[in-house]
Image 1 (cartoon, rainbow, N blue to C red):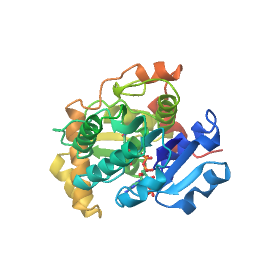
Image 2 (image 1 turned 180 degrees about the horizontal axis):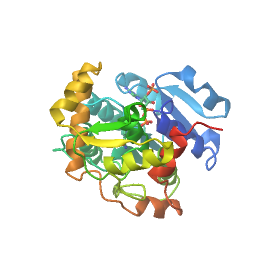
Image 3 (image 1 turned 30 degrees about the vertical axis):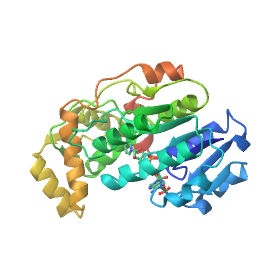
Length: 287
Ligand SMILES: NC(=O)c1ccc[n+]([C@@H]2O[C@H](COP(=O)([O-])OP(=O)(O)OC[C@H]3O[C@@H](n4cnc5c(N)ncnc54)[C@H](OP(=O)(O)O)[C@@H]3O)[C@@H](O)[C@H]2O)c1
């Protein structure tokens, strides 16, 4: 069976639904923290079992009969995240998986100032040590994250964030299709090339796109890391979340989320979604 974790989240759910189009439902299992939330998948014939990386005793049952396991990285950071990913890798190996796949990031790097990136690098090290063939899908930066970073500017008309660099924004849908291909025969072995969208765009470019798609001027203003952090905290963000975002901009201006790589489009056999189209559909109310 192909086991997909995180199937109640955005990416994992897209992978499970798209797998159904290529693989008999009886050969797909999902490992989720809340079984109730995946009843719709069960109704389509997918095996649904509870698996929580923070409760490793749940994983042998969740991963039973696994030929491959796609481990969707969790949204936590730091040692807890890596511990959870390691538990999932150990459980996949113990279940007899012939390949372990993992959703990493194009910026995975032990010395990155953006906190999730050292976690991805540490998980990739655990994959290497597992002794099981693995595929680390080095996903491009989510286009949906771009929208979250600039959402306030849609209200204020001012995109006030730290100095940044170009980012190869990438759609969930394209990354889900790539994961399905990797699970169903397209052999990507070891660390994949960066799986990116078609172009790099910085915050100034996003302000221009938003101006075009909303018809309202949105002005890009550079603020210092310290002022940005203070603003986030004043508006109620936990300090850890503010630090995370400051680190994101620091990594972006180092060029860690650039350049574009053709592998994703080549794999899909079609152009990848561009940020302007993504933002247009996300910020324009449906008619
Ligand atoms: N490439 C990028 O730019 C980028 C940006 C942001 C995040 N990410 C990474 O990509 C991952 C997937 O993205 P997404 O949009 O699908 O995020 P998401 O919707 O937040 O899904 C994350 C999934 O991780 C699961 N999870 C969390 N803790 C877990 C645990 N202890 N054991 C097992 N599963 C656990 C969640 O389970 P529940 O459904 O039960 O909560 C959820 O299904 C994120 O979690 C994050 O690691 C990548």
